[in-house]
Amino acid sequence: MKAVKIYEAHDKMITLINDNYNVLQSLSAFGISLGFGEKTVEETCFTNRVDTTTFLAVVNMTINGEKNYDLKTLSVGTLLHYLEACHRYYLDYQLPFVRKELSESIYINDKLGKLILQMYDEYAQEIRKHMNYEERMLFPYVRGLMNGQSSTTYDIDTFVKHHDEAEKSLKELKSLIIKYLPSDIHNSNKLTSTLFLIHNNEEWLANHQEVEDSMFVPLVKTMEENLKNERINEAISAFANADAAEEAEVLSDREKEVIVSVVQGMSNKEIGEHLCISVNTVITHRKHIARKLQIHSPAGLTIYAIVNGLVEIDSLKK
Image (cartoon, rainbow, N blue to C red):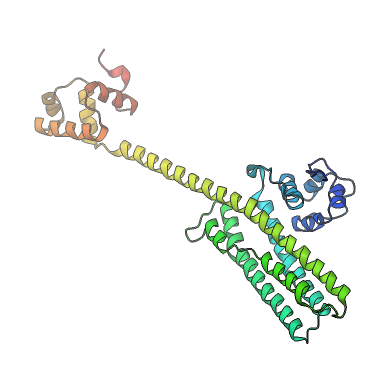
């Protein structure tokens, strides 16, 4: 059994291509141009402004099924660009190309041929609907998360509920062609070639969905959780600041005068005479002060008065 090679940043990009030509599709989706010569994976990714770690994680998983990567090291922006490019490749090129090849390799005027082509068209419509949903709902939502914007009407769990296994329809179509189309059908070589093409598309879709399920969805969940925690921390901070501001303004000017008088050692009667108010009013003010500040002792009020600038520490009696 051949040992699985896990590609690394120092490997040459051409080595990846020679080992598995399916990497060519990944290059295009990541926006990596050909003509990289003898450059390493890291050098090629740097030149094309692609996150090397994310590129290698996708390549190693789709080629070798390797999932030993750290989600925290992956770039959600790189994955988003990759998935969007994959959609364009499949919708704009692969779907119509396979239909053309299929229509040319079967008797489309034959009832069975018509049914096969009809089945492919229904599949194509479903896959377009599926990918268009992602482009309309999921991808803009993720861009919003990247910009610190949350949503009250959509989340990644909602996407997962809509996320079906689209490649199953291709597998069924391939199986029906192999099992039930007549063996004496014209242009059998072209039909065989088309079957290989459908098989490759089936594998491509499975890999595409694996990237979404194993990498993209967990990353987006993490982004949602981080943004949620940030919002909670901001709310706590705002609440604490509001409490601090309220505490600074909670005392009336008369209550502050009462505190200063208490700190200076005056009795309730002396405070009343000093402020020209009754003793009962002084007592009422002191109750309000104790309730608002949760401070009941003269020593505690002295500390509060010093900290909040109501009295100078040097002015206090020794």
